[in-house]
Image (tube, rainbow, N blue to C red; front, side):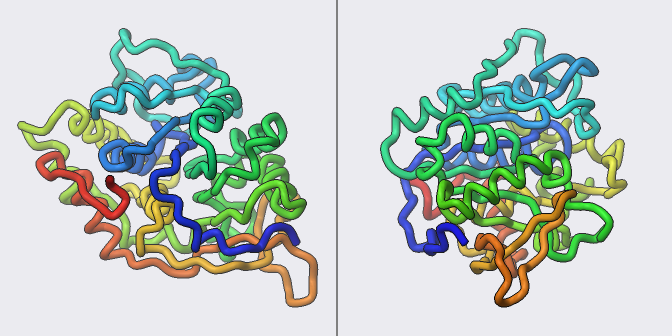
Length: 322
């Protein structure tokens, strides 16, 4: 059954934070990264996943992330281009990054090892995309695995399309199986999954007329805000592959859970993963892998926090600041 101790009681303040993101598609990734950059001093590394390939040129998500972090003043946070999974559907920021922004390094596992070497103790990992980079770390850097405290956006108990898995799990099913095996074998402490049924709700949608977009578009807003505004407008113009007239803040909500803010409730639950990445709760008495699964969220309070933190005119604050 793996490691079932409750990691939620562990004090993870001032521990390094790694973000693993497919930034550059749905704008919720970029908004979440901006929130972390503005108010998490312990942001130690940003990895990209589902990276761009020949269609746009390699590593374009990482270049966009570098440009965004630099604009917010987080020049010290390394950005590393991680796994490429093939043809990229979810990418809409082509042309928003100046040519002067260089290609970023590509050794994701080495970058995680560097964080581990510089910071003893637990390492927070916030997964906002497919689980490919995490699975590679578990296989190639097993000495780091036991130190990771993973909060991952993904999975579903009642996915809206019962014939397929949730998006992040669907993009790399073998990686999902590797992560669950690591938990079952005690190599990875119990992760928390913020699932689709908790995040796919209108309560956390940012639309073209939302206050977040209006504030980012203010004439006196800094360049990083205008970059996010341009990204939002790109996403809205295409309505996204899912034809959603807005962006749901899946990843911001996941970030808040990793920061132990009081917006997401989760509990231990035994899950199984099928051959195409669908997750189901294991019946009583059957074998499953115990993970923490989101069961409820306080959406209004979360959105107030998100809007305040992204307001260019406001000074970010929160219980996780020094």
